[in-house]
Image (cartoon, rainbow, N blue to C red; front, side, top):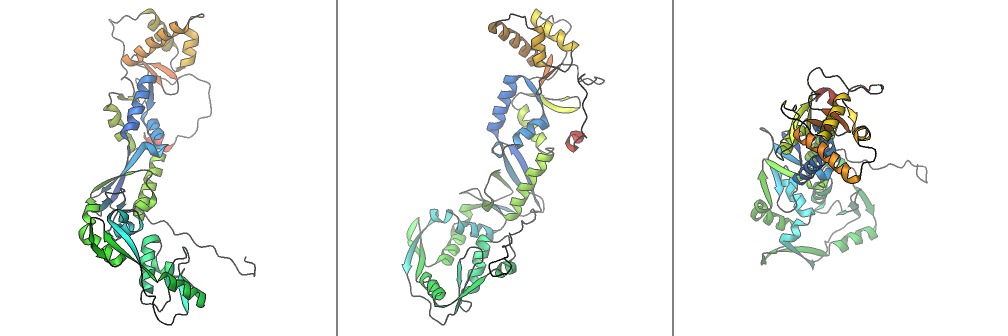
Amino acid sequence: KGREGGERRRPQRPQPVEATTGVAADIMPIEEGIDNLSKEIIAAGRTYSVFELARMILASRDRYKVIFRKEEVGPELFQSSIDGAVFLTKAECLVHFLSGDSVKSLYSAEEVEVEAPKGSFQTIAKCGFSGALFGPPNYHAYNQNIIDLHQAEFSNMALDRYKSRVVTESGEEAVNAWLETMKKKTQYRLVSDTEVLLEDEKTMLAHFEANLFEDTFRTTHRADVDSQIPGKLLSPGLLTLLKETIADQRRYPGKLAPFLCRQLSGRHLAVFKWQGKLHCGPSRPHAIAVDVKLAERPAVMLAWILGNPGGGIDTLWKTVLPVEVTDEHKKEWFHDLHWMINEGYVVLLSNGHVFSSDYSAAGAKKTASPKKEKPAKKEDEKSE
């Protein structure tokens, strides 16, 4: 409650709009991120679940972009060539053009002195959120001022609800403050041709729509945007769609996985099924040919792996490395293990468990390990 006992009401936040229908959103890993991920997989020699890799990408929004696609009965997309903003209507594009820095690249503003409005003004209305002045309710441009500010800054809110937040101030001081703001007017000149003078913002906007709109906003069926794009650069429905798509894929990256498989395969990594789930690693598993005879170090390691399926890589080294092995000698053992991994004879999973190539064959039993309470399977583990 306020100091005088009245209830203090907090302004209600505009509610997010529903996601745009007729437009699909896909998450696409950025090429540089996939390049780095591929190099890491090859260098470490480890095999990852494709869903695990997808979640690694989704963990940071600088690792992927979002692609908006017009569906068969969906709306056209308008994308700005200046800042990449994407909107669904011309009206949204024009509001964005006026409120952003784009207008400054095409038109220069000039402030000039003009005569203040004349009349009998008793009260001044202003925005209940930003404090912007609309003028007296009996001023000829009053209603249009409200509509213009609503479209520019509060379009997520219904116009009638926004109008209910308009407040008024009475008295000579409030009226004089508004009159002072009306003694100045902004004119615009075309940057590319300074002879073109436009007397006010509306005239400038009409000139832009007629002559420069198509050069600034392209009509398209597909628009790529940074996943971290500021919300003001998207139609409200597209912003909701972007957020929902990212949240859905973080829960279950089923749509991202096929894109990821194609990108990894294109970088000469192997994508294959391991124990019924898609994995990606340096090489596709395959058995050693009968006529291949391993050298001593690889043979020792493979014998241990066959006898201890799913054993940890650290345990492998503790068991097979000679007691007084030198650092230089260790490198030779590591090199031999990587050779077997790259040949597909051995699979080293991302969690450090190592298997022979044929362990994933039908009928292979799970690794013997200390029993733990098994949590309920997540939806993605069931469906993957």
